[in-house]
Amino acid sequence: MSEGLESGGEPGGDRADRNFVELLQGARVAVTGVQVLFAFLLTVPFSPGFTRLDAFDRRLFYVALVSAAIASICYIAPAAQHRVLFRQGLKETLVRRSNFYGIAGALALAVSMTAATMLVVDHLFDSTIGAVTAAVVALLALWTWFGQPARDRSNTPTREGAPSDDGRD
Image (cartoon, rainbow, N blue to C red):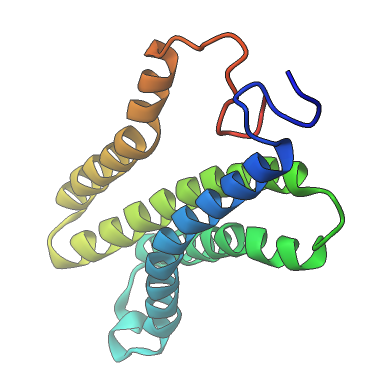
């Protein structure tokens, strides 16, 4: 193997650059939805009907709002850190960290979407329908975002010496 090349024939720096670009592309898809949800949640307390929420619904709102803020922070962190760490030779570290932030952001987004859905459905119908709907939303997010990829990852044989795309070679 030539010096400076990873086992897949791609220079380590090029692979880190490609991985970082791929992570940012994925974050761009999610961050728009997170920001719309977060912006909407920031306006809700100023609507006239908010005062009629009971203590449980206010707690649900709190969970939805704070988890949307956490998701926003996690999805914005890679771009902000890239600016701070620019040309410091820490791209691999940034790729690993950005992957972690992407997973944490997705978890926070799932919590926010679940809490917001439960809040609205509980307000429109009743607690039972709200809880069932929230459970379905949570399970769907967990399965499609984490469970199914984890199953695929565990069922895929790894080729010895092949570089991974998660920055953990």
